[in-house]
Length: 240
Image (cartoon, rainbow, N blue to C red; front, side, top):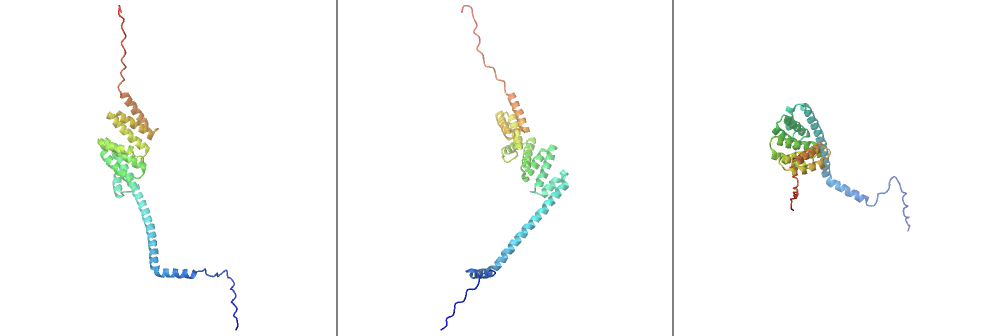
């Protein structure tokens, strides 16, 4: 009976290493998964591609639209009469807010305060820039005051004065107008409190200086303090 010698171990080939344990089983699972789900995978890839294409397409469209709006504004920038039409055609755009602001300034300069108030409100509703939005809100309130609508003006001025997100200089101006109104109404203590707020908001600004002058007027209007009564001197009488 012959004995078959065991086969000699094969030498290791670095270029073709043997597969790791379980590799064939893993490959079979992957292949099975692919066969079952390749349609869904193709659909998912197509959806991602379409989404990317749509996003790039929208970005291109938005960029072209932005350029178009800017070009349209440049055509009418020096024609106040055309700005309302531009603003209506581009509602929601920042340049529409700028257009309404310019129209409002023009109305105010012509003493058409009701129209100015309306146009400033349209500008404030559209603008997102803090400084321009604050300016439009102040313009609306001051225009309402000039048009005789004191109640609406005070409401707008108080809202702007108390708005911590608004520009400090414009909050100071709103506070000054409120202080002046309080002084006119004989509420000098309220006026002085507002003047103090102006100094906190913009200590070195124009409205702080005007507030200082308004305080001087308030102090000057106070009635003079009557001197304290003096004890009459005791008269000496002969015989005392």
